[in-house]
Length: 156
Image (cartoon, rainbow, N blue to C red; front, side, top):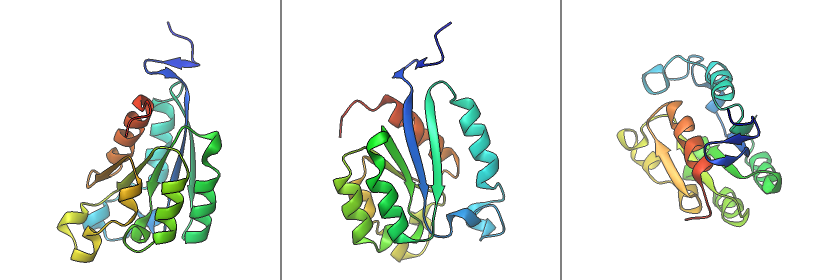
């Protein structure tokens, strides 16, 4: 049996997960046709339990663009970032600049399938600063992003 400090990909990785505006309302009545009914908190517990020993996960949420930018710049203690910027993905050059400059791999996740929604949602300013983008897979997109970061070796 391998020690808890190791996993099949190597050392335990520290991953920060950030949610932007309105993401906290997913599963709590916010447009269930796009966002379903499962709240983040339920999925978060499952994710932590499933990847214990492989990833040390930290989760933060803010509707404030400035707060998200500050948290991105605090990334030096982490191996990577999973970000759902919410609507800021479509508008924030400041968030894009922070992601570009932070020096860590970031995967942008969108719960809903943005390419089936309004046209303005299909333009992602922040995505170009990210290692990858996952859209339309609900909470599973976060797990896939985590798996990708666990395998990340500086590519990209």
